[in-house]
Amino acid sequence: MTLAKELETTQDIAEDVIVPPGDLYSDEPPFESKLHLEQIMLLLKCLKWLWRDRNDFYAAGNLTIYYSQNKRKTEHFRGPDFFVVLDTERKTRKSWVVWEEDGKYPHVILEILSESTANIDRDLKKNLYQNTFRTPDYFWFDPYTLEFAGFHLLDGKYQPLEPNNQGHLWSQQLELYLGIYQGLLRFFTPEGELVPTPEEVAELAEYERQQKEIAQQKVEKLAAKLRELNIDPDTIY
Image 1 (cartoon, rainbow, N blue to C red):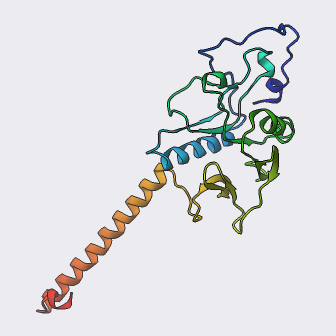
Image 2: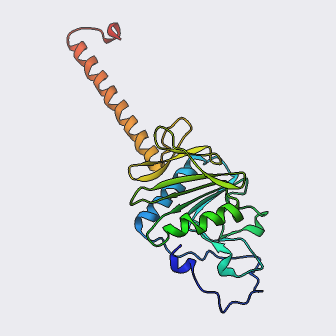
Image 3: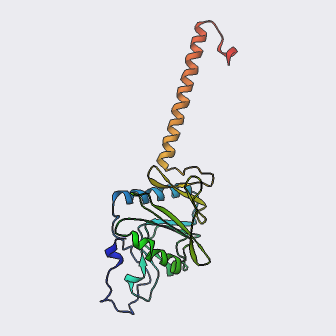
C-alpha cells in the first residue's frame, strides 16, 4: 500500500461510522513496480502448487483485510502485500473480513519494501501485526536492495529470526523456509530444496523426457552398430 493511502485523512468521517458487515471489496492500489508484482505472484504460484492438494488455507496478495466494524474505516483496514491464513476454506474472496472469518487474522504476512513504504512496514505495520493481528510470522523483503528480515511472535513480542547456513529464515506456520534465490524471495522445503513454480516443474519434466530420448537413441545406434559387426546386442546388454 502506498504511503499516501496509509496516511489518508479521516477528518470527514464520523467516529461512529460502521463498516458494512459484508460484501466488502478490496481497496488496494496497484503494485508500485513490476518487480513487486512479480515477487508476489511468484510466492502465490509456488505455495498454491506446493499445497495443490490442500483446501484448508487462503493465500492472497495486495488484498484488503478489514478488521473492525465500529471504527474509522481508513484506520481499520490494511492490505499486506502477501499473507496466508491457515485452517480456513480455500475459496475466492473479494477481501478478507475478519469478523466474517471466525475472527481469524493472517498466520503469515510478508511486506515488500519500497522507498515510500519501508519505514511504515518496519514500524507501524510491524506493531499492528504484533499487537492487533497477533500474526505469528512476519517478514519483509526489498527486491532491489535484497534486505530480508523475519520475526516470530513469542510471548506477545516479535523476535528476530536467525538465518540458517544458506541465509534462509524458517516460518513455523508454513513449515517452510523463505530465502533469496536469483534475486527474488522463494520458498524452500525443510530439507532445503527449492519449491518450484508449475512452469519449472514442466520444464524439468520436459528436460528429463529429452534426456531419456537422447539416451534411448544412443542405445539404438549402438545396437545397430553391433548388428553391423554381427554381434548380438542382447549378449552385450
